[in-house]
Structure formats: C-alpha cells, structure tokens
Length: 217
Ligand code: HEM
Ligand code: HEM
View 1: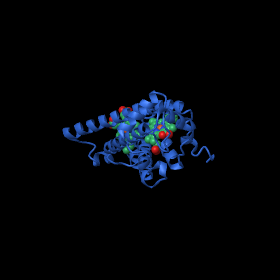
View 2: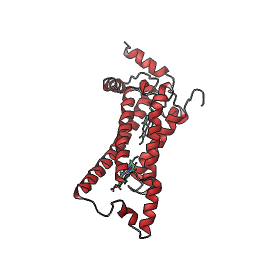
View 3: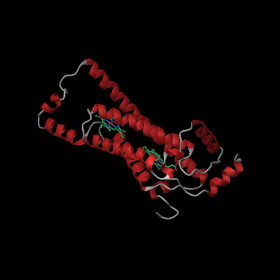
View 4: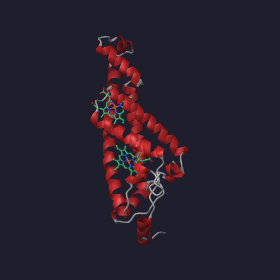
C-alpha cells in the first residue's frame, strides 16, 4: 500500500494526462453549450434548441468514445467508485494526491454526474419541444410570427387537458432544476480542477486544451 510519502512523490513527478481530440472537443463543446443554455439565451428559443441538439450529439459521441476511444478515455479507465472518491478527497485535503492515468476517482464521479444530468436535461428538453428539430422550431416560429398558428394547432398546441398541462409543468421544473444542478456541478468541478492542480503542482487544464503537452500535439 502506498504511504503518504510515496503518494506525494508520485504526484510531484507525475507526467500530465493526455486527452485526445474527441475528449477535448466534447469537453469544451459541452461546457460552452451548458453555459450558453443555462445563462445566456432564452429557454425554448431557436438558439436554445439548436445548442441543445449540439449537446445531445456531443454527449452521444463522448459516450461512444468511452467504449471505442483510447485507453485513458474509456469508462474502464475511470470506473465510478464513491469509496475511492472519498479517499481521494481526504488525501487532497491533506495535500497529497496520487497521479492517475485518466480521471482521478473524484473527477470520475463528477464526469458521470455531468453526463447523467445532461441526459435528464436533454430528454426533458426533447419532451418540451415534442422532439422538434431546430429546423422545425424555426419554421414554427416563422409561421407564428406571420400570424399563421395552424402548424401549432395541428400539433395539438391549441388545446390540452389539465393532465397534459400538469405533466408539462412537471417536466419544465425537472428541466430547470437539472440545468441549475449542472451549474452547481460546474462550480464544484472548476474548484476541484484548481485545487487538484495546486496539489499536483501542474496544470490540469493545459492537457484538456492542448492534448499531449509532452509531445506538443
Ligand atoms: C445544455 C443543455 C440545456 C440547458 C442547460 C437548458 C437550460 C434551460 C433553462 C435554464 C430553461 C429555463 C429558462 C427560462 O425559463 O427562460 C430552459 C427552458 C427550455 N428548454 Fe432548455 N436547456 C438545455 C437543453 C435543452 C434541449 C436539448 C431542449 C430541446 C430539444 C430544450 C428546450 C427547452 C424549452 C422548450 C424550454 C422552455 C420551457 C418552457 O416552456 O418554459 N432545452 N432550458
Ligand atoms: C459547464 C461547464 C463544464 C462542464 C459541463 C464540464 C464537464 C466536464 C466533464 C464531463 C469532464 C470529463 C471529461 C471527459 O472524460 O470527457 C471534465 C473534465 C475536465 N474539465 Fe470540465 N467541465 C466544465 C467546465 C470546465 C472549465 C471551465 C474548466 C477549466 C477550468 C474545466 C476543466 C476540466 C479539466 C482540466 C478536466 C480533466 C480533469 C482531469 O484531469 O481528470 N472544465 N469536465
């Protein structure tokens, strides 16, 4: 078993992780989309739905990459394990952290929490738009702007039962709560990246931006 001394020395001499282009693209694409949809644009707007569809595509790509991608990007490299995550956080508080070739156990839990919450946000978003693609949303908005409501009424948008309204209201709540949870997770995540980087005495952000910083890839 590793002693605190060996843990600390592993951390200091550790080489940076390598993140391939798919992990980097999906990471920054998802991060930018979450911030855009949770903070900058109007819920249900054409931009919001378009960004939402981009998130869905990035999420699917990352999940497929978790099975087919290189070793450090695979789920098998960072299994969800709350016990080792707590142990890792304790070691972090004590100023000693081991190097991991992929996400550390706490970072791994955070990644799964992000992906699960994103799945809830996108599924509820799809329900709210009736599965309409951004193109269909644009057409509907253009029709309504020109005074033609027939498209919405044909879809059942004109009349809905109390039950439908209450279900829609619940899904709206789920969508909004999950979006806020994403922001909370992001705040914890950024704090974790900063603290972990300080203890390891290397930037975790550089490999996520640049990939293989040792070989300048
Ligand atoms: C990154 C993922 C997403 C985030 C963070 C997010 C966030 C939010 C938030 C905070 C609201 C409430 C905003 C307000 O009241 O103005 C909202 C509303 C809405 N979102 Fe999203 N959203 C996401 C993805 C999606 C997707 C994928 C769709 C559909 C395909 C969607 C469709 C909607 C709709 C239709 C509303 C309006 C709901 C209503 O009628 O009040 N969202 N979203
Ligand atoms: C809403 C915003 C964000 C979301 C949803 C998010 C989500 C994620 C996810 C899901 C992962 C796992 C990556 C993978 O395996 O594909 C991750 C890792 C990472 N994120 Fe973020 N992130 C966000 C913002 C940021 C920001 C602003 C930074 C820079 C300070 C950052 C730095 C990192 C780093 C360095 C890692 C890799 C950590 C490690 O070495 O294990 N993230 N993030």
